[in-house]
Length: 129
Image 1 (cartoon, rainbow, N blue to C red):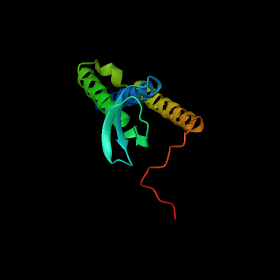
Image 2 (cartoon, helix red, strand yellow; image 1 turned 90 degrees about the horizontal axis):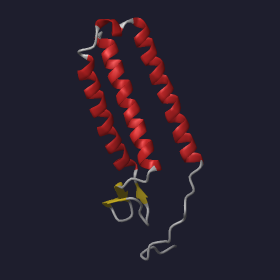
Image 3 (cartoon, rainbow, N blue to C red; image 1 turned 45 degrees about the vertical axis):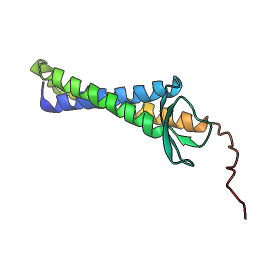
């Protein structure tokens, strides 16, 4: 397989695994690392009762899974026949990457548009002026 096709396939598959892991972890409410902004600490949980950001934990898990999938794909494709790296394969991989990007944009847009934010109670130390 040509090096360009090998790299593109590894990147496309790694990107697909990244997006899939991120989606499944959100929809499945997997426990992940949360950063509690007001308390300035990290917790590992499914959900938190205070202001927290799960993006860092979910991104880290998804990035590790995607990198592993890309590395395995790159290694396996080194043994693939040379005919797999022809122009049609590279064009197909490019289309796959574009489709994945479209799905990502749609997912994030729907996630942000349908999110409901519940107000939190003010901390006991807060004194309005």
